[in-house]
Image (cartoon, rainbow, N blue to C red; front, side, top):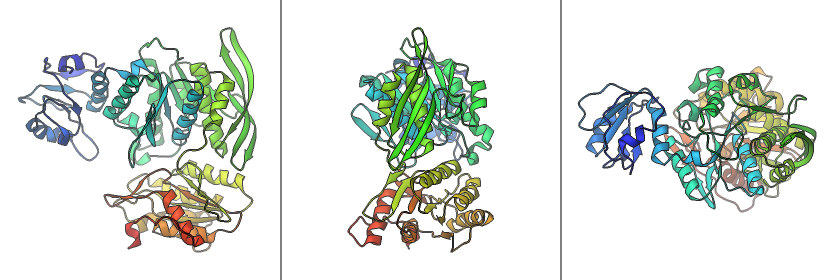
Length: 523
C-alpha cells in the first residue's frame, strides 16, 4: 500500500501546509460515509455540500489522514492543506493506481453532442486495426470482454472511478483507451491526471449554462482537454500528440488558439482536411467519400476513400470524420482501414435507434436533449422521409432553463407536429416547465392543440404521438436515449424510452408487448 509521502511526492500541485508521514493509505475517498480504517479522506466543497464539515465523522470512522482546502489545526491525524481539493483528488487517484494513463495511449473526446457516437466510431476503427482498445463513455466502460454499466444519469465518472478503470485496462493488457469527457468532468478536475495524447472535439453549442454561467465558461471547460495535451508526460508510445478540431463549428477559432500542440481541422468546408464529399443519404445510413492527405514517412500522400456509415444524418458524417481523423493523423492508421472500421459500427443504444413492431410509420428513439441536437435530429428525419416529422421531447428541471424555449422554438419551426412532455423535472413544477416550452412554440408560430400539445405523462405522450402518425411519417422520441431512469422530485424511477416506446406501440397496434414503466404522472 502507498504511503502519504509517496502519494504526495507525485502531485504537481501546490501544497499549502502538510503533515506528511510514512503512514500507509488503504483507500482514497471523498465520501465520508465510505471511510474505513486507514483510508485517506479528501474533503471537497461542492454545490450542495462542504466536505470539511464531515472531517470529524471521517476521523471517527478510522481515516488515516485528511486532505482539504481550509486551514485546520490540531487534528488527531495528519492534515494536508491544498489549494484545490478536487484537482488534488485526481492526481492522488492517479498516483494510488500507479499512473495507469502513462502506460496507455489516451484519446479524449469532448463536445456538446456526438461524443458517444464519435467514441464508438473510433473504438470500432481501432478494433478493426487490431489494437487492444478500451473505452469509457456515458453509456458504459468496455474493458476487454467486460462491459460495465456507468450508471443512470452519468457524465464523466469521478476521478477515483476513472483511474480505477484505467488501471483495470492496464491489467487487462490494453494499449489504447478512448475516454469521453464532459464539461462537468473538466470543470470538476475529474480527468486532470489522464495524460491525454490526442484530443477530439465534436462541437460546442448551447448546453449546461445553468452550471457554467455562460457559453464562454462552458467552452473554456471543454477547452481544458486541449490545454492539457501540452502537459502530458513523454510516454514513449507510438502516438502523435495532436488536437482534432471541427472546422465547421464555431468553437474552432477559440480552440485553435488555445491548443498548444499540432492541430488538424476536419469538416465539410473546403479548407478542412480530411473532408467529406459526395454525401448521399440512405434509409439506413450515409454514403460519402473522405478526401485528404495522410502522413507518410516521406511527406503527405493524397487519398480519397469511399465510406459508408450505418447511422443517419449529416451530423454523424461529422462524427465519423472526427474519429477517422484521430485514427489516421494521430495513430497512423491507414485511411482505407479507418473507413472500413467506420462501417463496422451497426448502431448505438438510444442514438437514432429505430423501434419497429410492424407499424406503418417510422419510430426513432434518440438522445437529442440540446437545442442543436434536436435541430439536427429533426433535419435528419426530413432527409429520411417525404412524410411528416413528429417530435416528442421535454426539458430537464434544475438545468439550463434557456433550453426550454429554444428547443420548443426549433421544433415549432422544423417539425410538423410537436409533443411536449416530461423529462426529469426533478423538484421543479412539470406544468411550469411545459408552460415555458409552450411559450417558445407559440412565439415561432405554433398553435396549441393543432401543431403542438402538452402531455405531462411521458408514456401517454408517446402513445399520443403514435396516434398522430400517418404512413410515411417519422415519430422522434427525443431526450432520454439510452438512459435508464427518470427523476421526479429526488427519486429516480426506472425508465427506458425504448421499452416505453415498445409498450406504447404494442397498445397502439393491439399486440403483445412490454408494460409501460411507472411514472408518478400516471397517478
